[in-house]
Every structure is written in C-alpha cells, then in structure tokens.
Amino acid sequence: MTAPQFTSATVAAGPRFGATDEDRRVALRRMRMLALALLLVAAVIFVLTVNRDGAWAYVHATAEAAMIGAIADWFAVTALFRYPLGLRIPHTAIIPTRKGALARSLQAFVTENFLSEPVIRQRLADAEVSRRLGSWLTEASHSTRVVDEASALLRSGLHRVHDNEVAAVIETELIPRLVDEPLSEISGRLLGEVVEEGAHHGLVDLALVEAHRWLSNNTELVAAVLSTRAPWWTPQWLDEKVTDRLQLEALAWIVDIRDDPNHAARRAFDDLLRQLSADLQNDPATVERAERLKRRVLSQPQVVVTAVSLWGALRRALLETLEDPQSPLRARGVAQLQALGKRLVDDHDFSSRVDGYVAEAAVYCVERYGAEVTTVITDTIDRWDGKEAADRIELHVGRDLQFIRINGTLVGGLAGLLIYTLSRLL
Image (cartoon, rainbow, N blue to C red; front, side, top):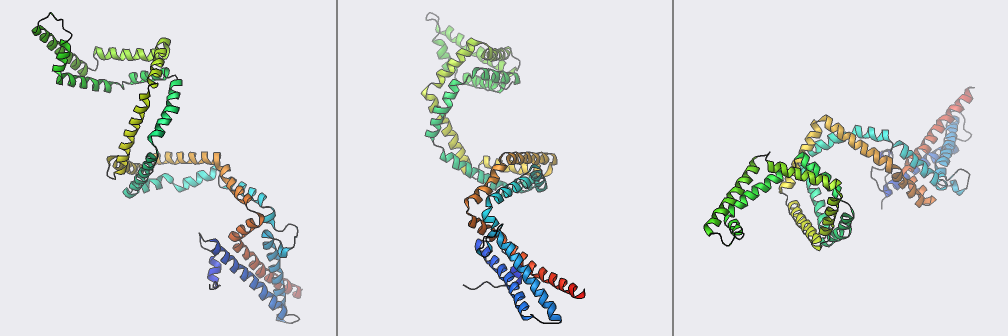
C-alpha cells in the first residue's frame, strides 16, 4: 500500500462529500503532519538562529513566537478530544467528559434553529414544492413511473392479504361492532339526505326500465303465473283475455311512471321513504324492528362467506387491472397525474394552496414530533463511551481544527516578529 501523496491541492480540498471514515482519517493525518511540520520547521530555525545578530535575530524571534503559537493551539485542539500528553489537566478532554451536556446542547440547537416553524415555512416557500412537483409530473415518463410504483405497492399489499385474515377481521371485529352499534338513527338520517337530494331517482329509473324489459320478454311466463290464480270455473278464453289485459295495463303503468318524473307513484314512494327515515330516527317501535332485523341478518354465517367472496372478487379484479400495463385504470391514473401537474404549474392560486397545505403539514409534524426526532442525537451519543464519541467527532471536524494549529504557528510568528521589531525600535 503506497503512502498518500501530500500536496497542497489535497490539503485544501479535504475529503469529498460522502467520503468514508478511512478518507476522513487520511485527511486528518495529513493535516496533523502539516501542522507538526510547521512546528518542527519553526523549532529548527529557532535552534539555528540562537545567539545570531542582525537580521537573524528577527528570524529567531519569529521562530520562537511561532513555536509558542503552535504549541498553544496544539494544546487547545487536543484538549477538546483527550488529555494532552495524558496529563489530567482541569478543563481538558472536554468532549469525553461532557459528551452528555454537549449532546443536549446540540439537540437544543437543532430543534431551535432547524426545526422551528419560521425556518420550515421559509424553506418550503423557497423550495416551491408544488411548482417543482407539477413540472415533474407533466412528463409522461414520470407520471407513468408514479403509477407503476403505486401499482406495484398496491399489488404487493393485496397479495399479502389472505381470505382467512379478512374473514377473521369481519367475524371478530366488524360484525360484533355493527351488532352493538345502533345504526337506525344513522340509517334514517342517511336515507333522508338521499331522498332530499333525489339521489335515489337513478335507481328507481333503472328498476322501472328493467321491470318493463322483463315483463315484455316474459309474457308467457307472466300469463302462466296469472292463470294459476284464476277460478277453476271460468272459461279459458276469459282467463286469457284477463291475463293479457293485466299485462298490458302493468306495462302501460310502468311506462307512465318511467316517463313522468312527477308521477303520483313516484311521489308516493318518496313520501314512503321520508316517513321511513323519520321513523328510523324517532319511532321506538321502528327502531327496535330495524335493530332486530340487523342483528338477525348479521348473525347468519352466510354474511361472512358473502363478504369474503365479494372481497375476493374485488381483489382479483384489482390485481388483473394493476398487473396490465395497458389497463384503462393505469392509463387514467397517468392522465390524471399529468393533468394535476399541469394545473400545479399553470394555476398559481391552486399551487399556493397546495404549498400552504404542505407547509401546515410540515409544521404540524415538526411541532408534534420534532423534539422526538432530535432525541436521536442524544440517544446516539449517550450510547457511545467518551473515547468513541471523541474519536467520531474528531474524525469529522478534526481536519478543519488543524487549521487552528497552522494559523497559530503563522500568526504567532508574525506577532513575534512585530513585537520584537517594536521593542528594537523603542
């Protein structure tokens, strides 16, 4: 293994970002060698210029002050991490002996200066999160990547959920809660909202269309059913006339209701639903019957089987859709993400609102969990012993601290030269 080359470029640059501990250790060793070399140079010059007159006296004074500055700063830097020369001098080995207090101070510093509301809001405002996200999402490849990753994550989750687990949750958690929870008032209120908004009209129309279609396509079946209710003594031709007439009247009645939004039958049905809604909320007898019906239905074993079957069918459909890269669901997801990205870029009001929501969420997380996050600092340092803490910290900042020794040597020498020059002039 060759020795590291000691050059001014490597000394100035130091270890690169993301360097390993070995890189930092090499850089620290280089800086120590440089600081020690300057001290040795000053010592050699000091020895060689002892009792020399003239200009050499100035050089001697400069070397003497440089040695003093170098030794003083070596002591100051070393005292941070260990006892200088192993001597237990008071107020030395500061980091090993006071690592707990230093960790708490560092935690407080990070909390107050990096995890505070003004800092978070300003940082997010400068980052323009919504605009950057919008620009990124407008690219089809990026939106497709988001959909692909989300699909893979959802598929993985669906594969991990087994039918027996779903059945256990429904049987032990969901159904007991539904049995114990009174649902009549909630059901009545929901039904009332549906009736007032007319949300049920679509289902009514669909039921009427399907009823008309079925009656039109099953005239012989309907006639056979009706004929079984005819008296035995009536002639067959009369029965046929009556059943034909009943079918025609039923079809005409259904058509009238279907085509007239204000038909009396529709209004009567709406009134029935409104009354049922009010009874479910206020009539004790209706509430009791509804609760009994609920308990009776939920107590049937088939409820769990049906629920699991529905879940299985839904899961299979979702898996087939998510596994197909060309599925309409995934294509729609990509299109919606691109539309969202374009809106984030073009609609400044919308992007400002999104930035506000992001800032509020970040501030909430910081205020609620920031202190707990920064305890990682104290918890981690507390797990280190004193020497390990000193070694780790010195590995990261020790190289820069060697500049104190170098500057102390140079500044000390210049100060010594100045003082000696002034003393000779005076």
